Image (tube, rainbow, N blue to C red; front, side):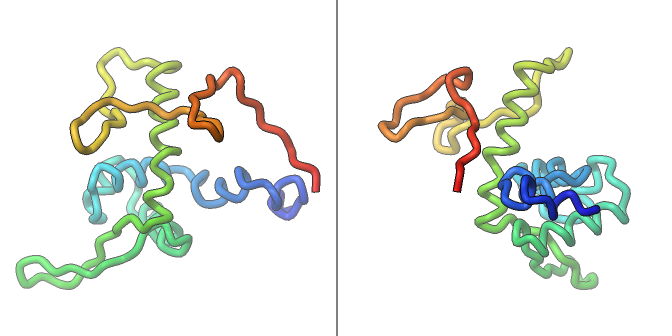
Length: 149
């Protein structure tokens, strides 16, 4: 049985997102894309098997998160690089939230290698819930509720 066919899942944006983002290695591939990596060899440095990387890049292209762009170096053969689309750039808060959560709840023995910074001045930023008035709401004061309808 396809769990996504169940009404509780097929109408759920989390479940739909996980059909793409929940595949093993996908978020790490996207992390590398946010670091500016675009080429197969650069992505492969995270330890992902080549056949899995090919599949993940293909599914991210198919989902509209990455787009292929051909390039050629030094008279070599044409290859593809993978660039974030607008939908791909919209995944940044997901990756940043996982990084923020991991730093706070699963600290490493050494300093973190990843921080969310404002591009203009490298000022650290963090994700937050903001209400309709622009006020920050503490996570402990936020609940998820099913909407009826």
